Amino acid sequence: MVPLIAMQELKDTKWQLTEVVSPNLPVPTQVIAAKNILYLPHGNRFQTLNIYLPKAVENQKLIGTPVTSLPSPDDKSLLPYWHIHVHGGAWRDPNLTASSIEPTVAYEFSPDNASFPIVAIASINYTLSPFPTHPIQPYDPVKDNHLDLSREALHPQHVRDVLAGFQFLESMGLKDDSYILSGHSAGACLCSQAIFQPAEYWATDSAPPPRPAAFLGLNGLYDLPALVDGLGASHQHLKDAYENLLGYAFGTDKSKWPAASSTRFELSQLDRQRVEGRAPRLVVLDQSKEDQPVPMNQAERLEKHLSKVEQMRVVRGNRCAGLHAAPWEEGGMIWESIRDVLELLGEG
Image (cartoon, rainbow, N blue to C red; front, top):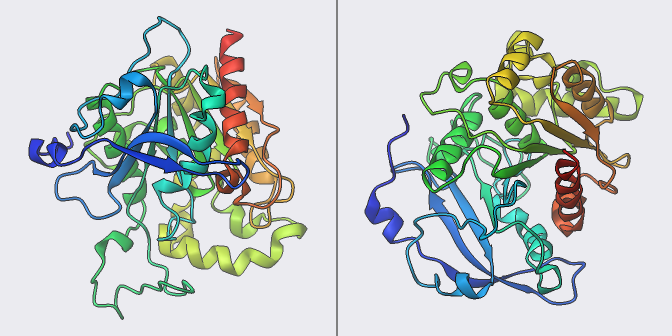
């Protein structure tokens, strides 16, 4: 089991009134938020998560008080009421963090969407891999004398962190079918790893995450070998770049990459996850046709694979458009996708 966060650490983390913005909305959205919450004792700066609440009357009473739990809706709706997100950034970008969900938060908690059923949004950070060629903040563990352990992750450290984040959220009230899980790019890969394999597969003693009602993958990376050997003509020029970044994130032994790829998980294991109530009943995969680094065949491969799993509905989303980062940069696409997921879940 992951050790519980020290009570003093949680007491020092308090709800604050803040603003979040989307470039496509005319004004900022005021929300109640708690940021950079450690989900592991003595964790590094990326073993943290953010939680956002709408500025409802009952939530305003929380301002200045310690973070102790997640809110639950007053009604008895069978639909999920929390949204959990895992950001992308090629497992290595220190500038792409849990706060990247904020344009989406601006939409979901806008006063114009007061009837939106989501009552809390959590966004999970995780330890990053080295990025020696980052244009602004390069980091090489050897050259930099291992000064920043938050940027020295090697698979499966990333997914272990995400699982620890889930265990922390479970201690705050996260339950089976209470949330929609979304992930963008590498974050979609991490989500699929966390929910389609048992926790012990990743050599961690974390508990399995509560079952999400649905998984929403956005411009995701699901087949690691295919990012080098199966890019297709449109993305073939990225082969060397992918080989480099995957080497830092997953190791240079390519024979180990399939085991980390959700498109290649054994169908018997996927069936077991679903039968045992660990995998979602709905998966929505969305991929922009204009995505410059990710080919369409990543989503296509996962859709084909998961469609063979019994009692799992797999649907292609149609909200992602434009460049790779567009969904999280403007927020509206993810918000619309969450609405679509809620509608699909409402169909039964």
